[in-house]
Length: 109
Length: 109
DNA sequence: CAGACGTACTACATCTGATAAAGTAATATT
DNA sequence: AATATTACTTTATCAGATGTAGTACGTCTG
Image 1 (tube, rainbow over the protein chains, first blue to last red):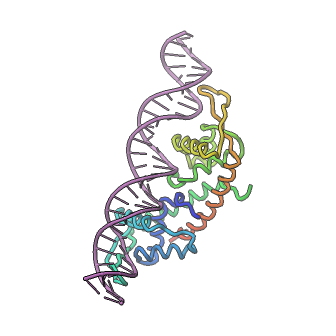
Image 2 (cartoon, chains in turn cyan, blue, brown, purple; image 1 turned 60 degrees about the vertical axis):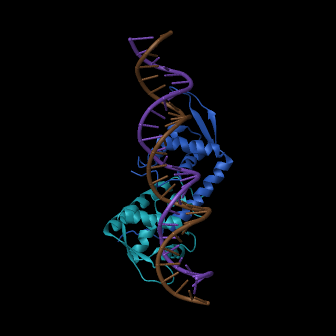
Image 3 (cartoon, each protein chain N blue to C red; image 1 turned 120 degrees about the horizontal axis):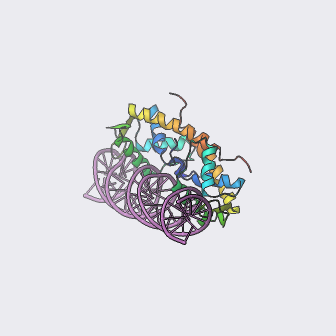
């Protein structure tokens, strides 16, 4: 089981990474994450939407009404230029963090 | 400069990793972290001590009075068997998390 | 030997992101 | 019209990080 604490602050990055490929909406984003991680990481519904709202508030994504499948119409999200920049910055930060923490992680004992 | 928020949940692991080598006390642990990361990561004083208190409360470390250098006597910390187990579990968790998140991190764009 | 100084913490308040529980909204189906 | 389905929103709570400030204990200096 994956600790959500270490991913804290990276849920936004995960979502942006998917939106780089194509516009998407809540349920599909959630599904993509599950599939990309072989069901290892399932982002909670409230975590997903609070991340989405934060991203939109920060100007990293924009939304537009989409088509209907069954039920309430979907809201699609598209990454913005600021979102791309933020994504790149977070990727760089992640690489630094990863290398740094690896100093304290031992393969075997 | 790395934000400790990124490492949230792994500050405990970092401290345990240092205590695997030798017993230590607050100030020295802090210094070791700085040195091991080439000053890239400087754990805040309050973060350090709150992590230490949490570790002790959870039974992952024990403390004993040490000698004096100048000022208040040091409290030394020693990792327990439970602490070793916890450390190993966190290392395993970290490897999983690292691989998982790497799916969403792109080297270049 | 009193007061300044240094080391080693502790207390308290605040912030952010994750998340549980529950509710709302819009549309299709029966 | 009632129910089901999909797509969210609202509200409240929690933990870990961190800023600000203060305390405790010892040495050093005049």
